[in-house]
Image (cartoon, rainbow, N blue to C red; front, side, top):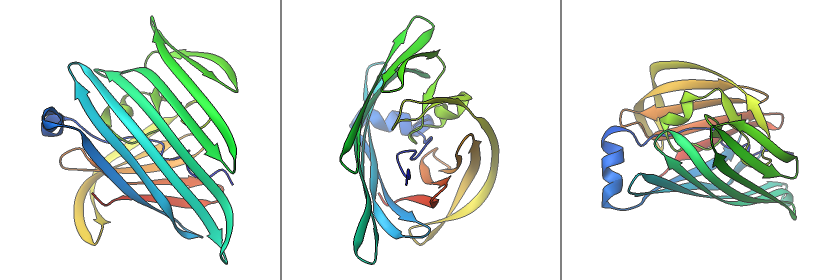
Amino acid sequence: MRPLAVLAALLGGVPGESAAALADGPRELVYDVKHSVFGDIGTYSNVIEASGAVITIKTAAHFLVKALGVGLHREDAQRVEQWQGDRLVFFHGVTTKNGETTEIKGQASGDNFVIDSPLGTIVAPGSIKPANPWSTRSLESTTMMRVDTGKVEQVKISGGGETNVNVDGANTTAKEYQITGSTKYKIWFDQHGVPVMFVVDDDSGEITFTLKK
């Protein structure tokens, strides 16, 4: 299984008043994670902090997939992103899947973003965005970096229509976007630009991330 860490490929929001709220301290978005076949499998969180012009996102992911009480897949990740305006300028991530650890490093360099991973060194466009939901600005690029492998791929972004989605038992008005690449994603942002839910559709089934706080 390659589930999660694909993860969440995508975006979330801190525009408008949400950005202003960061001035009062870090903001934490915590998600319950459910697999369409295996049920509840863990949690995913983004802690967002602002310091001057730099926004730092600290991500933690903890997944355990079981069937009939037997562990099939364990995945844990710790990642740090730094953004200046709409640009990703730094990335460091460590993902451990079933005991095997992968480290990804990335740094802005001129008009490019240089990624070092087990795949080698990749020189990507400076407009690249990581597959992690924290801000709607992640929708502004069609070049995406997979946060668990460092792989770079071209994606198509569509949607943006208003709909209603059930979040923790409450009917929430949100805008729905689709991101299509080697994996398909859906993301819902509420009226404040907060990513209240996102779905990763990979070869093991649908993985749904639902905001709980």
